[in-house]
Amino acid sequence: MAQFEPGHLHIERHALTDDDVNYNVCLDYEMFTDPEKGKGMQFTLHGKMQGKDVKETFFLPKEEVYNFARDVTRIAEKYGIPKTHSQIGSDHKHYDMMFEDIRKQLDMHSGDPVNLEHFE
Image 1 (cartoon, rainbow, N blue to C red):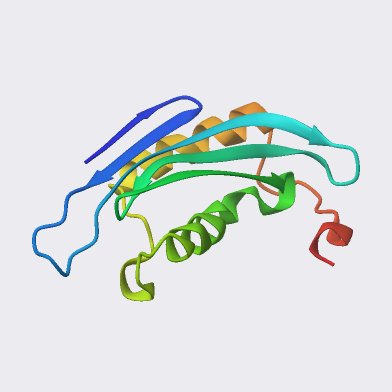
Image 2 (image 1 turned 30 degrees about the horizontal axis):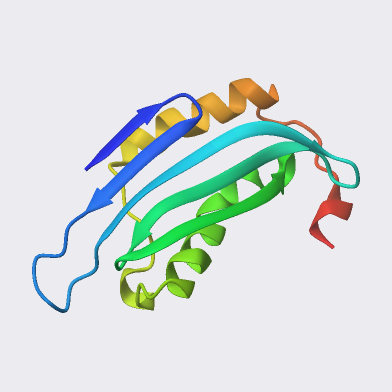
C-alpha cells in the first residue's frame, strides 16, 4: 500500500510469511540548499522496517535527486531487509507523482545543465 501527497510518500508492506519482509515507512522530502552542493532535496525516511525503528536523513543535490531510491535501498538493507527485497516498493504512479512534485519544487526541466563536480 502507498499514499502520496506533496512532500510525503507513505509505503507499507505486511509480511505474509515468517520469511517475508515488512515495513511501514514514510519518505518525507523538502527543498534544501547545501552550502557545498547547492540546491537539492533533503529526504527523511522514518517508520519501521523489520520491526526496527528507522529515522535516516540524507541530502541529494539537484543532479542526483532522481536517484533517491539508491539511498532508500541502502537504508533498507541496513535495517535488515535482504538485498532480494531491499527496493522499497510502491505503485509506479506514486513515484511519478513524487518525481513531478520534485521537478516543480526544484524548477527542473529536460535539458537543464548538470554540474559534473557533484558526481566526484
